[in-house]
Image 1 (cartoon, one colour):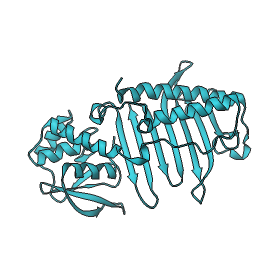
Image 2 (tube, one colour):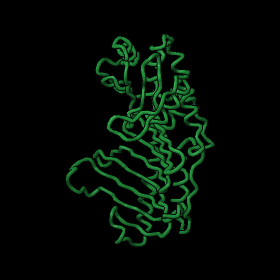
Image 3 (cartoon, one colour):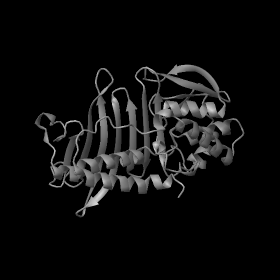
Image 4 (cartoon, one colour):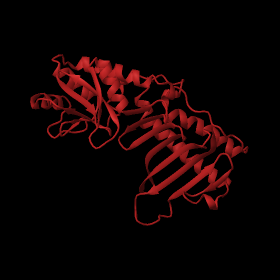
Length: 314
């Protein structure tokens, strides 16, 4: 769990904290937002947590905040050695410093913060595929599954889902949103629970949908790292669209396992290759497409069960 610069800024603005001049994060040239809460200045680290500068948080208050999450010094997933690693942790600490803490208020502020964060045009619809030029029965099945895959990886772009209020699923699903507008813009959304992860990224160089899914097969533990992406050229237009699959058996981590799979398929050219072996690409076979379809179905089912079902009203 961590907290992005955007998340910190929106949380503090939602709370109504006093905005101070931006601050150079320690060891980081990036300017980060800084806010005043009851005389303590909080700023983002420039990585994935919040720190206080100047007047420190009283030890008694920090211990009380940690206790609300069942944590003790040095902390857990919300606090660690005085660092703050979650929005709910930050809002808990802020309200305690201002003498207005209660759990219901923190829940309301947390929910309002995430609603503002997720009301983001760049995640409100899923990306149209630029290439759909190869027509065969198996490729048509692959195209259809990729559309379904996108709507599972980024559920906020799926208009058919009836999503709960954020506060109703945040304890079950970790949501991270990083956003930068203007030059070198990007949107990075991550949903995760336990060992399962779904990620959507849209930036100037292209976009990708990505999932990480643990799986057991043939009595071996392993994982599927699946992705669908396109790359932009220097003119900002897509030059290729690829679906990729990496299945790895955890056993014999230092050696190639016969069940391992490394496959990439270009939806523009119909060529297939292994990672870093594009120069040796060959026309994709029906068997390779079927392998990709099989693993896409597994990822869709697992992410729907492990993440999306916790986020929707059924």
